[in-house]
Image (cartoon, rainbow, N blue to C red):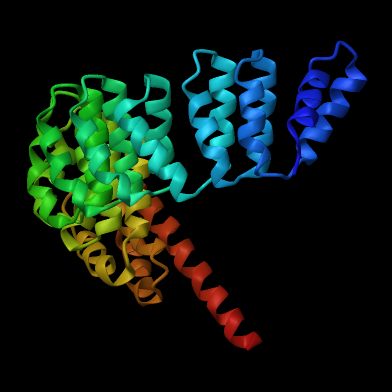
Length: 359
């Protein structure tokens, strides 16, 4: 057991003007592994200068025992920023029930700094038992507190938070609404979708994009008609890009045609690229027949893109069809698309033949 006299001497050496003595004192402190020394050393350092308190926090980060929690919580509440941050970083190294209980207490009685730390820590460590206290803070007047709580509830991921979060959809604050949509998209199930559809018509492109992401993540297929309208008519490039991404995850015959149209005619190069990527994400069984049918479209630009995407499928069954189309097609742009698509198919065929011959 380390006695008080020895601990007092160590603290005094930490304040020595001589760097060698200070360095040796720090090393001796960090090598100390006596949990019973924590309350005695805290009594000594609690009235000392910030530098000593910071070193004490660094030592507690090494100890990582339950006994380290009470002094760290007290130091976390310090008006000194260096001390509070040192206590925070030390608490980050500890994970036990005593810390969880202390942080839940801070949610109710801590200062703003300690409360925000408690919210972040409880969320990052997925402490389900803190859910009731976090949900209460969804009504906090402090916007930052509310947003941190939404993120913490999303990280914990317990379905009990879904209903309280739905109530936040009435918020007029755009940032709060944005975070809530993402949280519900990640935590909820398809039944939540009906609560989110109205936000596809929100004046803010940021909110419309978040609504599309959430509905896509929830696999709320009833939103597909609205997605089609957004892809065709929404004035925001980022919203149309998000629709392409979600459609690529969903797949389906009608979606293939919508994406091909976007790839052909959208005024934004970025959206056209996202539409192309989305088509490539859709399983072959869901798209090749649709693309083959669209090669007969009267819309020449759409027809050319359909041939190109059909070639990119790598399905050799379409080689003859495309070779005949190349011979009969008069439009040079479409012929170029067919040639490019055929190059994909022939490359696939050669690669497959080589693989078989090696086997």
